[in-house]
Image (cartoon, rainbow, N blue to C red; front, top):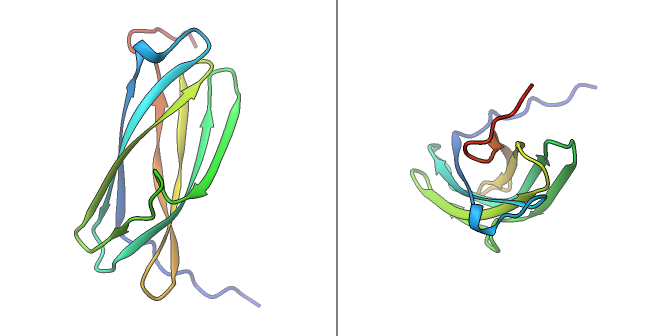
Length: 130
């Protein structure tokens, strides 16, 4: 028996702006802050239920983070609405990378995943040899 077709992903877009926090970093503990902007370009209201992050540092250490909402909230984003928040992450070795997805739900209980575009966690001015 085949699965019913999945509804198309909603037009909800995620932008990330990441910065290195040199003053809070030490060798072996690099701190980055990131600002996430979630824009609802669909005609539905969506509630952000959960987040999933995949974080990998230059040494190959992987961290998976799953949790409810973001920064202690489960924001409701109406059509044309935007939700912005900031958070931070630490990695042992740079450059690292981070990406994942949000789980959102509409007023009828339908859930969808919104990808978080992968981004690099790198120390400005540091050269990496390949």
